[in-house]
Length: 166
Image (cartoon, rainbow, N blue to C red; front, side, top):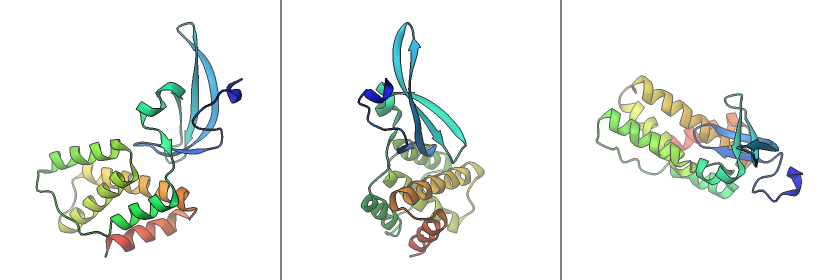
């Protein structure tokens, strides 16, 4: 029954869940909520070994989206080699700005966070929270780019650091 309904994503398709990473749609299931049938995507996220269920109607507001096209992944990678302009605010404000960028969920926002925190870490050691944010953003970028470009995660990681060092 669920397979007959037109949904944005299909079973087996890889998707991006902001803040969590790339997942695969494992199932599209119907559940009864308040006496009404509700269709859910069941998405397994490898990076955190977690399964989430998201109502099909709420997928847009949750930020779940398709993996970017290969050319967009390359543009995001290339964007991190652009001249870095440091933001002169205290670390808490910078942290919040970066969290907001990651929540946006676009690959370009994530690349911007990676670029900013990488260059910041070259000047001064990052506070623990910012270091965790950097590690998470880097993992998100590696994860999506590896799926988008069909390349190994280690190869993508090398590419990212090559661009960051330019």
